[in-house]
Amino acid sequence: MTTSATHHTPESSKVVLLTGASSGIGEATAQLLSALGHRLVIGARRTDRLEQLADTLKAKGGQVVWRALDVTDQQDVQAFADFGRETFGHIDVIVNNAGVMPLSPLNALKVDEWNRMIDVNIRGVLHGIAAVLPDMERQGFGQVINISSIGGLSVSPTAAVYCATKYAVRAISDGLRQETEKLRVTVICPGVVTSELADTISDTTARDAMKSFRSVAITPDAIARAVAYAIAQPDDVDVSELVVRPTASPY
Image (cartoon, rainbow, N blue to C red; front, side, top):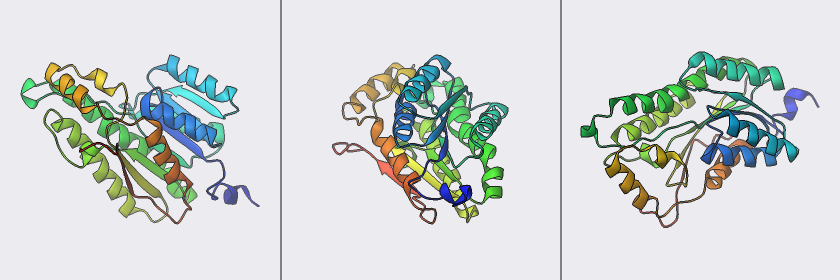
């Protein structure tokens, strides 16, 4: 069997780029995909945690490389993808997971935080797509998995800009899906997940509201399993959208 045929079978090892891999959903996804035998290229800003994660996974037999990554910098994202391609020969999947969530009411006028969310949550996803799309189209296969949120399905107070960015991720994902016949495009919308994202909230009202909101939360590995499920489908099956939320959550 030729090499090109082997990585088309769902049970075989795929080369996966993963952004925002240093904690939360990204870290859990790296752990699960590595355990399933996929080859990983992980990136994030916190290199100490990236290196520690990579070492842990390699000690368990995983094939993992890491690189410092700022998804708001298009050239950096391109270099990250190129690094993955140089290491493993090609790219099968990119998981655009990096995201920030500094919630606040609009009248708090935290414009810098709005811009940060737009840069990471929207531009970061677009940069990821731009870094892999030409090669994936050329090779005739590939998968783009974008992490949105239930905030991309409905809006809540203090989350207007955050929700706007996550609506954008869904729009971009669906647009890409419609524009290609060769690539699979998946958007995953997590409900409330235990993570460090809430720690980035500087607005007191929003932070307190998030604490009560998070009284019902699932662990990040629930989202990792959704990612693994989407990857594991045959090439002619595109899991377009998955919503994963706590059973007890009203949201």
